[in-house]
Amino acid sequence: MARPIDPLRFEKDISAFEKEDKMMMPPEGAIVITGSSSIRRWHPTIKEDLALLTVIPRGFGGSTMADALYYVDRIIIPYKPRAGRHL
Image (cartoon, rainbow, N blue to C red; front, side):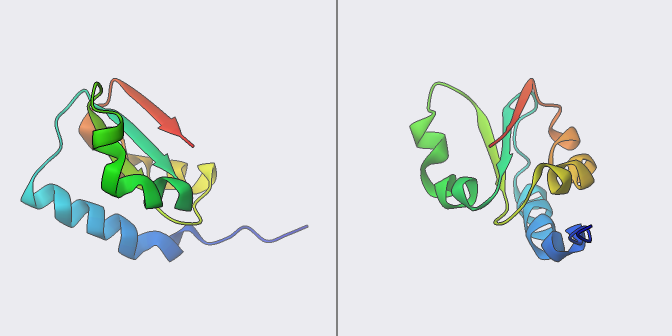
C-alpha cells in the first residue's frame, strides 16, 4: 500500500493565498476553483475567461482532492462561497 503524500508540501502556496487575502480579501459568495497545475497555470486569465462569474482561483500545482480537503478551512470556507469546484 502506498504511503499518503504529505499535504504540508503545499504550505508555502497556501500561505501565499492568505497573504494575498490580507492585502485584498476576495468577495464572499464567489465560486472557489481549486485544482492542481492546470488550474494554477490558468490563474492569470481565469477571471477574464470566466468574466460572467465571480471566481476565486485557488489552484496549487500537484494537489489532489485530499489536499484541497486538508486545506478547506483556509482556502475555501473563509470566502463563504456559493459554489466550489475542484478540477
